[in-house]
Every structure is written in C-alpha cells, then in structure tokens.
Image (cartoon, rainbow, N blue to C red; front, side, top):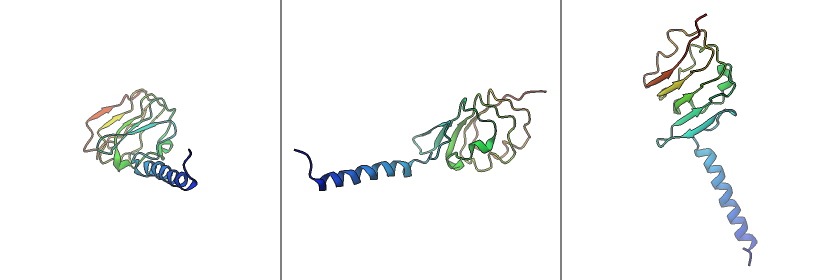
Length: 127
C-alpha cells in the first residue's frame, strides 16, 4: 500500500527542508569549485585547494567567510605572489600552506595581523 498523496507531499516538503537547511547551515559554503571545504567541530572551515591550478588570489573569491577559515591549504598551485591585503579578515586562521608554489614576491607585512597563525609553510623562489 503506497502513502496517500497528502503524506507524499508532506514527506517531500520535509526532504526539501532538510536539503535547504544543510546548505544554509554550512559555514563553509560556498567553496571554490576546485577545492574541498570541511567543517570542524567548532563550525570553522578547513579549505583544501591542493593542486587546484590556482594562479592568483582573485581565483579564491568564492572562499567561505574569511572569519571562519581555520586552515587554508594552497599547496602545489601556481601562485607567484601573495598580495599584502590577502589575509586582512582571516581572524581565526591557524594553518596556511603555500608549499610547492612559485612564490617570487613576498612582502614583510603579508602575515602581520595573523595573531592566531600557528603553522606556515612557504617556499620562496630566489631569482
């Protein structure tokens, strides 16, 4: 015996609400297309963009709210420099990984206001 049309309609609404609520409650949304974004136990974002073919920071415009990112992994991309204001709103970031990029230019104040930063991986190419 199949459920009545009214019951099917109610079940459909419940399912739709669940799907929409997951998107709304995900603090790591939106996530850049070529990256993986996960939520930790404190509802903070771990963003992994390893080997995502990123060559500049405008490519990361679709990152989740900077205030919620606790880890950002940009390992093995083609990033040549890190602009000074890049991390201005990264107030909770603890881990940054730029290893395996082609960074040629790095100013002294790029990481200046990252008070919560504990781990930093950077390799600068000396030309």
